[in-house]
Image 1 (tube, rainbow, N blue to C red):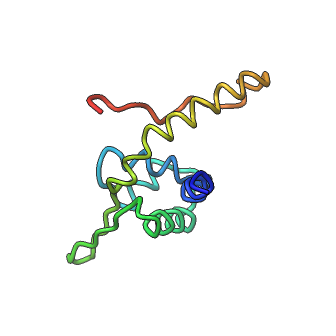
Image 2: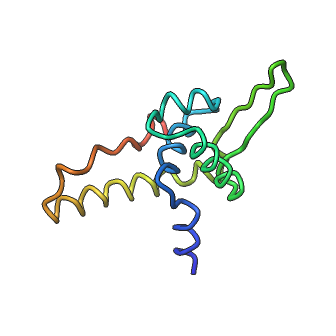
Image 3: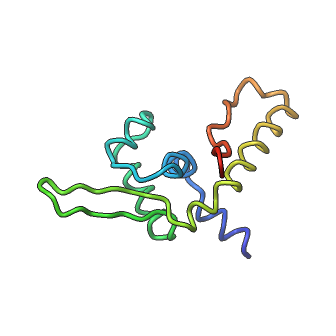
Length: 115
């Protein structure tokens, strides 16, 4: 079923947050670690690899000393931006309906200017 496939691809505690930070352009692993301080490096790398396997993220290795690696959202990954925004807004509405709005944060995924 297509919806199950979509949920499998974006499931994971950090994938939406990581993708959000890649929507604005390529980031190095160290930049992502600073932007998402609550994630361990092991989990960050694991989530990036899974998204790369699913075609959402591109990893580019620059032949420098030391080697530089940058991650960026592919066109397929970028196409998830409105989906992730809608999921975040639905999550807020759900929490509000259950009287748990104080337990959820603000959506960090927002439509970008000019997008």
